[in-house]
Length: 446
Image (cartoon, rainbow, N blue to C red; front, side, top):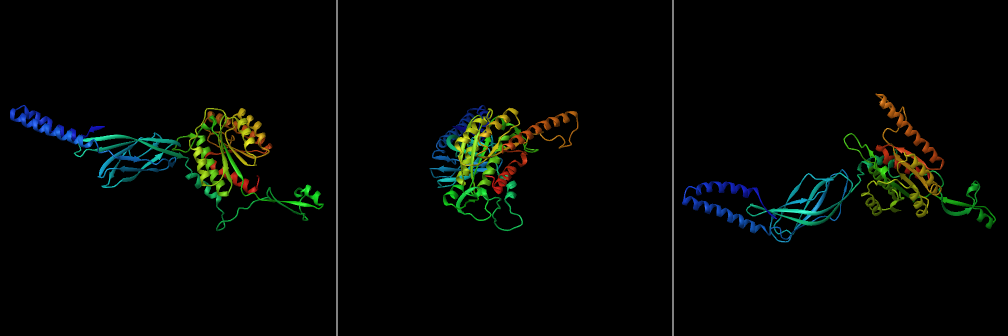
């Protein structure tokens, strides 16, 4: 599409009205006016004809996948190809999604003389997690005389993947892995004798009766002891609830608007994956709502971590209630080896809490289960704060105390079943989750 530029309108305004008045004075003036206006028209038409093919052979290549982190400055590397030699200046526009901001609406690129391609980077900043396709690129080039602009829309294939931002979480977690008071790398102390069978040996005075292998003792006619080793590679699974409970708004700070609790769930899960990778364990994911949505078998390595990240970045809360019967049955059937199961959900609804307590019996004897929940705003002991200014504030604190008391009773019920329940604050959710995992590793509870 060819559109006029301001330069053509200015020249028309400068030539047409004066010479039109001159043409009204007589035949000589009319002839001069016709010549001037005609010359402008011929120049404009010739300029338009020469402009028609100025974008032929020009194409723009986007990266197939551009990976970014939420609320962090990023860029997209573009390649402008020029099949015909010759320098020209282009203006390029992208169909940016609404959740990705850029300081530039358009960018100008100079195609060098006798160069097959030009490369440049376009800065941007994603505001929401998810997948965003880029399907079109808009090009504009000026005519040789500057009277016209040729515009063209080219199809494109590109995708922007925005992942949770783990920079702040890594800073919070870095102190957990420091070995203070010493230099270099040190082995982490493990408490206990281990649970993984290694070999049999002859009985030594002082061995406990629990370690004696009675079948082999009966066959050989002398005491034989079992020897265990410390488990170094264990399986860790995070079960993420994406039901309607995960859509609750969670405050993020004074300047930032509240975000769904699912954002904190995903960030904490990936942070725990980094910790498991550093400890040499196998990390896996299970996503559930009213049914099991995604299941990533526990593995390790950079490729596996990227696969876990790719399976989470598009998740959104679902308008369903969690089905704990479905997820616990799935775990019982698909996970044969004893694992650490970290549930991230909300159990402040009495009916859902009763359903979880009932169904967790399917897996609690085989697996070590940890349940973590974000502390809802206002849910705290009655005298934990003194910012009570009116009677309404007192009633709100009383309601929060009753909700906190119910969660404490739920914690005791789960504790009797060998399930650990934690009510964690939003600002330390990821750090506390990793701390739980490190304590399990140190005490060899698996």
